[in-house]
Image (cartoon, rainbow, N blue to C red):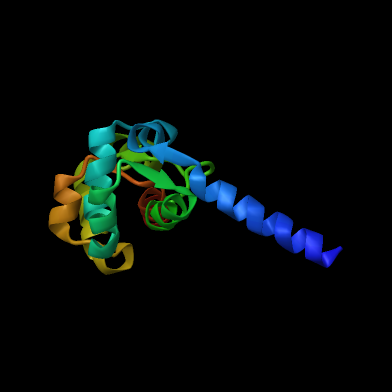
Length: 133
């Protein structure tokens, strides 16, 4: 019985590697454009993943899991724009910028990243909402 289960898992794993998702499909799942997804990947993923990202047109399940570990999986967490964060937290833009500026290390990004981004990935969005209350 264990032998059959083991082979079933191996076959399932091999089949999952053959299923691939395009960058457009991934962007649609996040509710953003392909260009915005590219920008999020450039800002929030390490260079080793960026190299892989630029070489492939479609991502397999392993690459997709790595991507979601950096950006967040969505679901309960949402992709927020700066305006949506303002509405969610009930604060003004200057207060939000100041709070984020004080917590750049906790959020794990630089000030220029915050200034250049209008939309934040689910993982960062939930951290910002938590900080801003």
